Length: 226
Image (cartoon, rainbow, N blue to C red):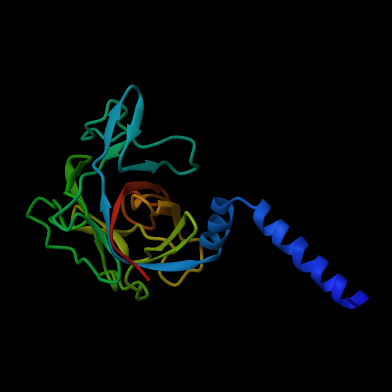
């Protein structure tokens, strides 16, 4: 055997030994972390609850200007009124790739947009959530919601998400229409399809001008990874 062939053989043995030393789970994790997939389906919402001083499930809070404190919603069912607990609507949650339009308000200004969440009391009036291509106020057009997954990290574009309350619309998406700010982010477990999603969105105009919506959704994804 020549010197060069001996070196080649030693190199192959070293590579095989190194590969055998890596746990199978670790290599699988490395592959999944490097792969980006898109989600097609619905981010089903788990209803919010509040017990022992802590929230669970999905909820909404509204930070006062400056961010040091939160608005206390008298209609909240939580003992800490800064948490408005959310329940899934008729569609079960946020549908990706489609718009879920707002239904008309009733005469009292209560939102009837009940596809994403069940209309929920907020300061004496029901608020709902929709995803609108363009808000009535004439903001730039927004794409329908979309989501991508890399490893266990979930990223969601929800610039079209809008809160409807008291015959008014407040964009609560991220990034804002026409903006490049960060997407909503969270976690995803591929074995169970369980997800969490968090984002913040500042309100412009209306009685809550300068307040910031703080959103937390969690539940189970129903659909396909592509």
